[in-house]
Image (cartoon, rainbow, N blue to C red):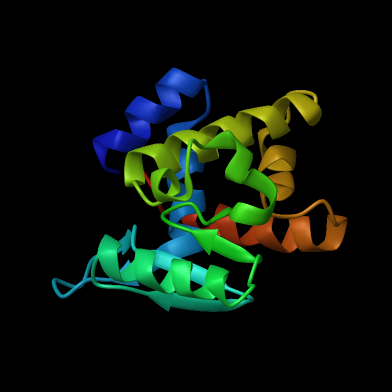
Length: 150
């Protein structure tokens, strides 16, 4: 697990292993060396996931989608949805910075943890969806990564 996840997790009092497992669930990409890592230059626009080679390419695609009137856009490592969480950031561009994206996700996760009365798995589900069946499917996906992450 990259150190950034531990650093952000410590600051926001969220489990690093859960944060990293969410990132893998959201943006996993197999690299040329065969390893699987969360990919920072990822967008999901209206349900269609796209991986980019650079932040600039991701930024251009996001801005183009916004100009076209799209509001359902998930951005970056942790797939922060701009419709629901842009207010947590200074700007759209901040969401595209991996460090800011991680910090905002950890903040969201911690807020959900409080709403879930101290249940991290409930918080994981709520991070994805307020709908119980969708939340449970998401928890199951994150748990699969969680069981593999050391």
